[in-house]
Length: 120
Image 1 (cartoon, rainbow, N blue to C red):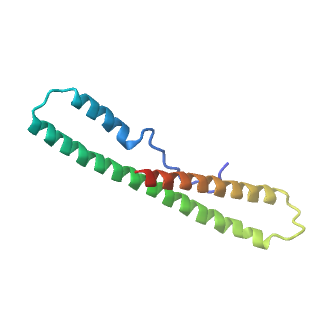
Image 2 (tube, helix red, strand yellow; image 1 turned 180 degrees about the vertical axis):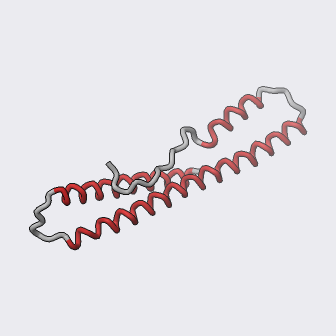
Image 3 (cartoon, rainbow, N blue to C red; image 1 turned 30 degrees about the vertical axis):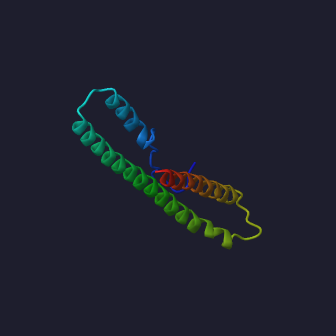
């Protein structure tokens, strides 16, 4: 159960360069003229750079989403400051537990996203 219900971005199933490596392998096996092959390699290099930028942009957007989620959760956790020592409603403690768990999960997703951005 998550308390702050913001959508979580789906992670790309495949690293940006893996499909491109397979395409390059197929092209390497084709007998092309030098000029054509050079132009094709140049186009693949540009495409690769675009894909790396796209992957980095997605990863940073995910990290920003998680930062926003954590900020909202911290606002909810501010209730902890006003919690009386003898709080009779035990469900309040369970709710605060969920909030802390949601912060931890969002932080882990954010850390993974930043790591992916650094790998791009």
